Image (cartoon, rainbow over all chains, first blue to last red; front, side, top):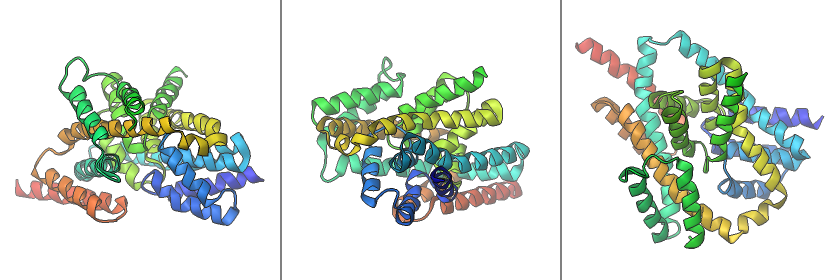
Length: 180
Length: 180
């Protein structure tokens, strides 16, 4: 039964891919090699498309791979397979955290984790920034847009509390008009 | 039941406007969950992202499970998670047939170049907020700088950074207690 196999393959990916969406890639390549459900170049297309559609990259890729295998029901099966292990693991961790809330050592671990988490998000932001502003050469249009957005979202009282989506739509329109 | 649907639709909205993976979700989460709804705090978000880094699966999914579980039990965790993946399922299934063509459309490329610049600024703002909550003394500043340098210059799994910073947190706090 294709759906059971599809679910199990993506369950495995969800269980062993640690560290976010891009960590699922090696697993997806291996599924492609073993099953022939989709090709490497289809996966590469998917990565490109993930940057141009909303949603987490790992989910988008699983959905697309599942869709290529057996249509919409395949997309749903693959996605459910991918998220099931994380749901189980997180529910267990949550129960553990509840039980040890206030414990000196657990609190100390988070005291160290929070700045580390912030640093890793900073690093991820720097990677996006390099691709956006410097790749393949200095891109002045995107730099100017970023400076304008920085001012609008921080320094101007009338605009700084708007929903982030407003800025995403605004930037998409600016990108189209000025041909970024 | 109302709470579960509220979780589903809130996270579906968040999934629909997250461009560029889990980290890009942070500014939207801060706006929708911390500022608008008071469902969680900046500190908790930093914790969830750190745990998401070292547990299997997509970070966006992990964070959704955490917040859903916190707000409405195990089913809350499941509904929030289904919500965050729902837009991907719909959008990718709709685009799957034309996905290669879609990625080549010029105005789509321009729009997403603009969105990427926007995402950089939004991540920068979000990280700054997180930074003020997580880097609270000289030790956490040290952890922040060390992990930032490590993430930028070393090609290591985030799991290692999470382990090191957790241990560092315990060592610093034990040392502080001994000293006083």
